[in-house]
Image (tube, rainbow, N blue to C red; front, side, top):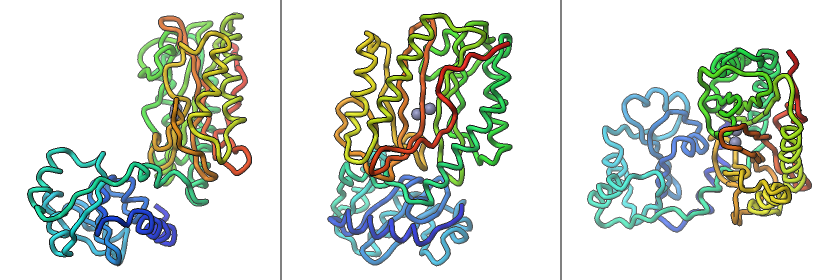
Length: 361
Ligand code: ZN
Ligand code: ZN
């Protein structure tokens, strides 16, 4: 990772300023630890005091931690709970704010037992949004991931033909993203043809594409830790009037939602706009998931753009807009872009055209 110690220091200041009720904070999520320190290991804990900071890792990660975060105090543990208890004891903390979604009940009970005098407090819900507003360096990485993935899809598009299997396209697309500079794929690529496209999270299999199918491709690349997320739905050979009509409807829901994205609007409002558009055509019942989600070090992160969500979009957030219609056993359409929220409007980072493309053969 291009380690950016100034960005990490700013994030650490923001953490200390925003979550200061406890004597120490216990950060457990690997992506949160990476965000705050630059350490990219998959496991560990970070304890943050008012004027001290200790990264706790097991033996596998000591060398990596020293290299990635030079100068940071490292504590090597055999068992994470014992490590946290030892550090808390040594520092004499009276209360610890911890990431409750990431500590198992068993670990919590063992920690309580090891630190009977210490108050353990879950971090407030607002902590979920701690990484939601991206800085310029993060936005550059997401933009780069979107560029790499978009170029890979453009190269693979001509393969989307009758007789080709879903898994062949997924494999080629993933290969092209890696060859194009992605360090990983964002998630297992979805290539879903015909009735498979009616499953929002289909796994690509041996199904052969047939003439007249919709082929839904949901995919993304990771660049320096940051993800992109985009879905394109193509028609193969020809599209029926009904397919064109529903595609136009989903695209309209997508466009209206994107036109509404700007700082100050609630996440639930974006979802409501997409859903209302489908409802006008009686299709809201076929849209079985939320309209979008934050994208960053995780492909799915806060905020969620779903019904009733009151979180307010802020400039610098990166979120997806991805309405869909899924007709069980028949076909499905999803149209997804990753967008950067701005003071006025938004910028679409995933650049593949979303107009209906009928792939001729
Ligand atoms: Zn997606
Ligand atoms: Zn998504």
